[in-house]
Image (tube, rainbow, N blue to C red; front, side, top):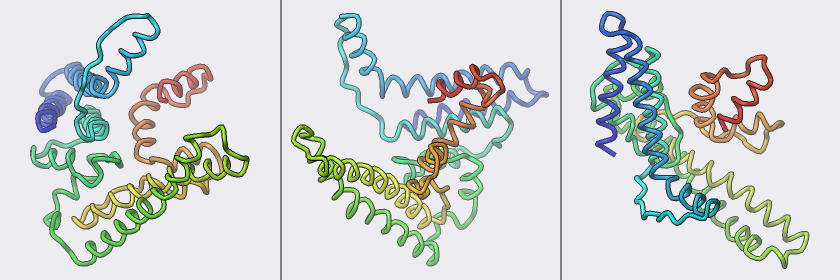
Length: 268
């Protein structure tokens, strides 16, 4: 992971130099950006999906490609997407060059590394550069501890207990009564919510202990009044990333319905 961080810090620096007209032509910045994004996604696809693709090829084509035992790097989806945001923002001129240590902390900041949220450098870099970063302050420590405790309770006391009933229901669906089926479905529904909401609260709480504010990542999900609102309240940071770095660059909600449908399918 440290090698990956060092590599993409060097690439982002090359991009930031290349976007300056007095230094090099803008085309070079675009090429560096494409190289960085493709390399990032290529590593993610290799570690997470190479065996998946091989197994499906074997089933569809009758081939016998051997799958490998690949050790998945911890939190690779999250630090991959965060590095992509930094590379693209560097190309857009929105990211300023800074010390390598700040970039290392930005990518590897552990409270949100495992389950998100995916954060932008403009949200985090100014906080890391404050002299109060890492200094335990009573108010932030207390608020962070309370938030973390609430998230831990959601996970251990609610989500994990609901999971027991959900697993029992789905393990043998043929013997379920109508009432049992509804109970298993509702348990699974709320297990998912409290599990993710709990992890989000724990991440925010841990960051607050260090004086860092993370963005909200799950907000009153089951009070949504539409599918669109539901999508915007579930994994808010990932939805924002997909909107800003995939959907809008593809053309977003342009007037051509076929183009809009294509953009949505590519984004999903």
